Amino acid sequence: MEQGIWLDSDKLGQEDEVREVLRHGTLSMGFIGLAECLKALTGAHHGETEEAQELGLRIIGHMRRRMDEASKARRMNYTLLATPAEGLSGRFVKMDREIFGSIPGVTDREYYTNSFHIPVYYEISAFDKIRLEAPYHELTNAGHITYVELDGDPLKNLTAFEKIIRAMKEAGIGYGSINHPVDRDTVCGYTGIIDDTCPACGREEGDVPFERIRRITGYLVGTLDRFNDAKKAEVRGRVRHSTGSLHMPQAKERVQV
Ligand SMILES: [Zn+2]
Image 1 (cartoon, rainbow, N blue to C red):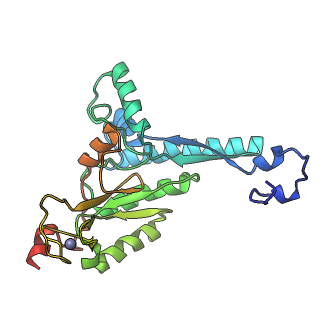
Image 2: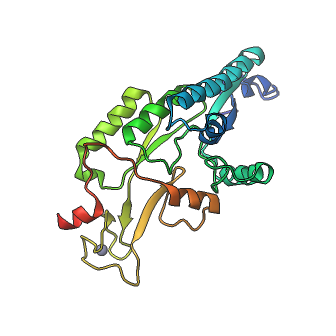
Image 3: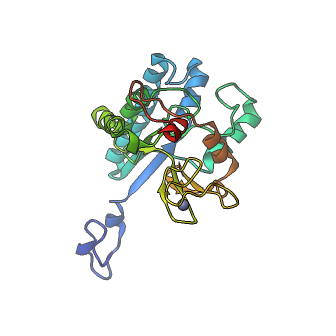
């Protein structure tokens, strides 16, 4: 407080209360599993039907409105968060399954889908995913992310990479991420995409495995060891998002190149 990090805290005296300064902080409510919610209500999630997407925007729009109303009434910063939910994604679905049983597309997996995301297992193009998730970014003023999963090496197709970034920007994605494999040879230190042999030192993957770095809920990891079972199941279930006519060279093709 003395260092003026909080808004208005520089005006405080040694013996003043901090009440009015703490008002500048935020109080956020988050949510997970919009996809499963829509599946339960309409029989389809928002990647599958326009009807589900419309309902999804109404639900999240309503939640945001309630936050804004509370902010106005209480003069505090209530905000809506698109929760990435690490522990919660597995815990909630387990609790619900005990009550409601296993419902296809709702409680039959080990995890609930993050926030407003299209389910990770659902086959959809990168551009459709961006188009459908973007409107939720504006509604979730406490934070949000949209990511697309690419199988290939973006360096081999910078045009496609740029087109995805631009599509995100045009659609109104506040925070976008492109996930793609990054490998590292722990022996020689080479970082890049390694197929069967390291391009730097030429060694094959034998007793010392190459490190395969992946992105899990914002963390870049070389191993899944420290993630819980729900998150591991989610990673296993992830599909890559196609970029349509924009060709991303795949692993096998790169070997031929
Ligand atoms: Zn190497």
